Amino acid sequence: MFTAKNLGLAIVFLFFMGGGITHFTDPAFFESIMPPWIGFHTEIVYISGVFEILGAIGILLPSLRQWAGNGLILLVICVTPANIHMWLNPDLFPDVPPAFLTIRLVLQVGLLLLIWWSTRLPASDSPRA
Image 1 (tube, rainbow, N blue to C red):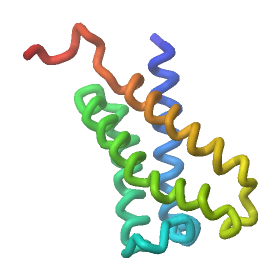
Image 2: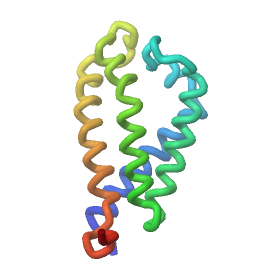
Image 3: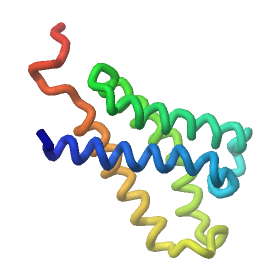
């Protein structure tokens, strides 16, 4: 049965699977948006790409869904400095409209909420304390 929660899972899956793959097909883009005070740009791009793909696969498996969702939430929080760096330095990214950089930060909050909501187990399936 297709539900709103399944739609949320599909959106999260497509976002992270697509993004994860792009970390390998266009790593230079992701390296370019990282703040200069963060080291190991190339390594972080590839590692985060792996975790995006693993998280996307994990949310498809009901037994791993909540753990994978938690991991994706942590990942989104970890990449926030790159988004803030872009927002604070729009002159470094002349091909990206500044309004998009602001909207992107707002959408990031929505993405966090969508991940949380779509990956939570139903109350009847939650482990009891």
